[in-house]
Length: 210
Image (cartoon, rainbow, N blue to C red):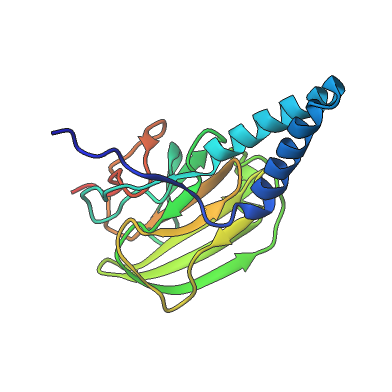
């Protein structure tokens, strides 16, 4: 007997973008029956709606094994030792990736801080100064910091949780609309299991070395 396929939903927080686009596509498609000229608007709007449905997909997943799991789908952009002994793993998310981010470990959300900033491309080294949301989780490994960073196109980060919330490893914690980056800081003494160029899957790929 075949196992059921994972269910795919739409990410929370997409309505402000998807709803008006889909409505405009439906209206212009209906008007095409009156005048073929409306197809000039209906075709691109329908294509845009389809692209947004793909971009805002949010598939169900079973958590992988590891003390720390990837918070994001994407490609490892850098693995850097930090002055305080931690290691920063930066994951670049292209517009083709799922953009729902997940908790790297089980624990409690200590803080969720929005920091205003710019919107340079997320692969640029200056993106450290971009609009971002800084998370701190109290876990079995101690404090875990995760940073959602907006990119040149992604100008809205949508946290799903507030301070005090309990999370299981791999739980959905927030969304970044369009291309962006997520940084995970490994505590001192925890070695990374990924290198630059590795592909990651949120809630599945192990980030720490056993």
